[in-house]
Structures are given as structure tokens and as C-alpha cells.
Image (cartoon, rainbow, N blue to C red; front, top):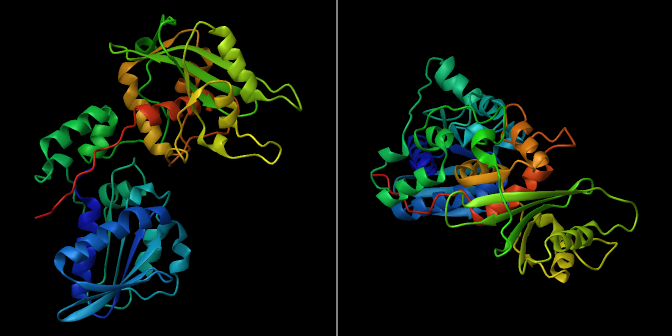
Amino acid sequence: MSSGKTYAFCLKALAELGRNPGKIILLAEPVYPMVRDVLQPTLEEILREVGFDYTYRASEMKYVVRWKTGHGTLLLRSAENWRRWAGLNLAGFGIDEASLLKDDGAWKMGLSRLRDGYHLTGWTTTTPEGFNWVWNEWANEVKEGYELIQARSTDNKHLPQEFIDSLYENYDEKLIKAYINGEFVNLQFGQTYYSFDRQKNTGDVRYDQKKEIKIAMDFNIDPFCAVLLQEYDTYPKIRVFDEIRLSHTGEGDLMTTRMAKHIKSKYSNCRRFTVYPDPAGQARKTSSKFTDHDLLRKEGFVVKVKRQAPSVTDSVNSVNNAMKTIKISSNCKNFILDLEQVTNKEGTREIDKSNKNLTHFSDAFRYYVDFEHPCRKPKTKTFLG
């Protein structure tokens, strides 16, 4: 959602510091990278805007904030390590994006540490990520003292209209309910690629020898998978016309080279091949001086890849959104099977990989979609008045 959750989260923290001068407030994100990339930049921006002085001790992840009549301390932590909060004496605590946590362990630990202040309180901000513990605590079995405030992205009057329009363009119907309307929607259970519809998304798709071939590739040893597609200016804009599955034949089998040669041989009249491989393929192995990406380049392929593997949540959202304009050949039986049968681990947005015959083709396709058609919001600065 674009309702300024993290901004409001930090303003709430400063308000609680004012109510508890000289005391400690803990702020948490689900994982440390979110502390670094989301929480800290937002917090420091707000501190500068309101004119508060502060010092930051990186070794302790601690901000000592000073204003005209007092001071207080903000501790920044990752909620996945909530057991390390034992022993803290807090006046307040907050958990941002709380629905990303698999259970209420961090919330309960935070409540148990509320023991030193003048206005003891805990709060969370989040995008609804299914009917999980957040839904249970604030919407289903609401206890005394709990209050749920829901906001739509469109309620934020400071967001430009073109930003709102872009959200509707980038999200499918299910994500619009969760990320724009703030509704609790089950994104954590069942079919991962829920927007796929065999009737709408499969059919007769032909290879056009005049167009470039784009290849989504997964480096799994067995099977080694590739999804072949072409892009068009008219609907359907993404057309998947072939899939290739190779099995490992034994020691010395350079599967990346074999896959590249197989594709070039099968489509020898194509003048340009662009491949979107697993980012892990850029790591050099001890057994070879060439990476998988090097081997693809040696075969004349253009390699488009990001430095790191895409976020599972973001890339899955991208695939679901892209289903609006994808047509897949009915002959791509393994890829279609993936889209229909791959599921999430219960209570999470992580993909269940327990079935070794699934996920490889859809993983490959995620790399392509995340690179060329990412489902991301444009950045805009939000002011809360």
C-alpha cells in the first residue's frame, strides 16, 4: 500500500518518545535488510524534517534522539531475531510490515518487555498479507485495547493521480484488494500463480522466425529448463511458444553449453537470442574458469540478468500481473503444470519446493518477467499532513 505506512510508523515512534522521555522504544522490521533499506532512511528523513538532533551508534543500531525539552532512545532490530529482545526494558515497540512474519512470536515478546515508561504501548503497520496472526489479533479475535485502522492508498491526498493510476496498471485484482484497498486477502496459501487460467492463457502460439527469441532459463542440474518466448506490440504481448527440458548425462556434461547449442540448432534461422538466466549463474565454480553466464555469452547469447535473485514476493506478483497479456502454447505442458500446481508454503509467501518435479519452469519465467515487466510502484515522496 502507498498510504505512508512506514512514514506513519516512524512518526508514531517519535510521539511515543515524547510521551516517554529518557526511555527506550524498539522499532523492528521483519528482516535486517528492511531495517537498513526501508526503516533507517525514512526515520532519518523525518528526524531532519522535524528538526530533531540525533546520534546513531551503528554497533548497537541505536538512535539517541534529542529535542528541546528532552531525549529518548530508539533501538532498531529485526523481528526474525525476536528472542534476542529478552532482557530489554521498553516503553514502547513497533513492528513494521508485521504480516510478513510467520507468527506472533515477536509481538508477544515485545509485549512482555513493556515495563519501563509512562505510556506503555505496542503497534504494527502492514499490508494485509492473508488471514494470518495479524488478522486474528486485530480483525478476528479482537482483545480490549486493540484498535485496527485501515487506509486505502487513494485516501492519501498527497499522492499524485498518475501514481495511483500506475498502481492499478501494475496490480492484478487480488493485489489491488490487499495493496491498494487495505483488505485482508489470502496471499499466503494455495496456488502461487493464481492469475493463470488455462482457458485464457493457453492456446495455439507459433514461432515467428522474423522476431528475436527470448529465453527464460533455470540452472537446475536435473531438469535444466528453458522457456522460449517472443514479445509483440499487440495482445497477447508475451507469447510462449516452446519449452526445453534437459537431463544431466553424467560427469563432464556442460549443460549450459548443451542447452545453448540445442536452442540454436532448433531455431537456426533466428538472428538474435536474449537469455534471462538465474542470477546465481554469474558465480564462478571451482571446477571451471567460466561461469554459466560466460558460457551463454560464448555461444552468442545476449545475457540480461540482475546482480541478485529477485524477491520471491515481487517476482511472483509480477508474473500474476503479467498473466493479463500472456499466451502459452498448449504444447508447453511442463510450464503449464508448474503454473497450475506450484503452491506457497502454508502461512507464507515462499514457494513450496518439496516436489522436485515442480517450480523449475516457473522459476525460469520469473527471472524474465522480473527483468522486463517488474510489478513495482513508482517512487514518490509522501507527506502526511
